[in-house]
Image (spheres, rainbow, N blue to C red):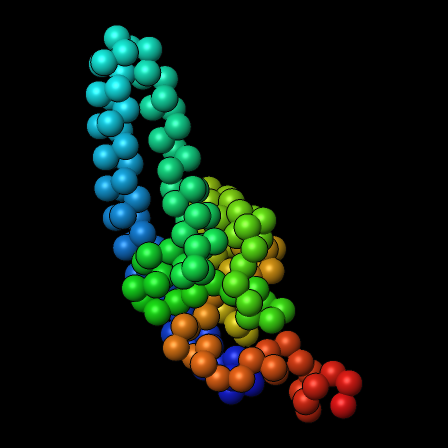
Length: 161
């Protein structure tokens, strides 16, 4: 792994774990607040609005997807831990479809007992299975200030040199 790749991904695993916990707390607060609003709406509509409570499981997916697509390119927990989500090929911000695949892949990984997340322990760029499938990578924001020209180049310089 090049020095640049090491600088981008060094320490991201523990930061991702702490970010997951922080995001979990934020999502829990959001879900509880939305549940209270929906229950009150259900009471006001004499029970007709209560089926909207079935939408609560979508809150974490939308939370992750919309925040990763935002200008931060990270969930609030990731941003607090100094992480950003980037495209693997050029370290640009992720597109909406790639972010959606990334989020869905994350929740599928959790449903599979978290085993696909362990790929980060063995991959050179600390990428999990959903990172690889979506073509994204989670990097340290502070390390992005360096030159990114060599991120996916073969050893020895630019591809056409």
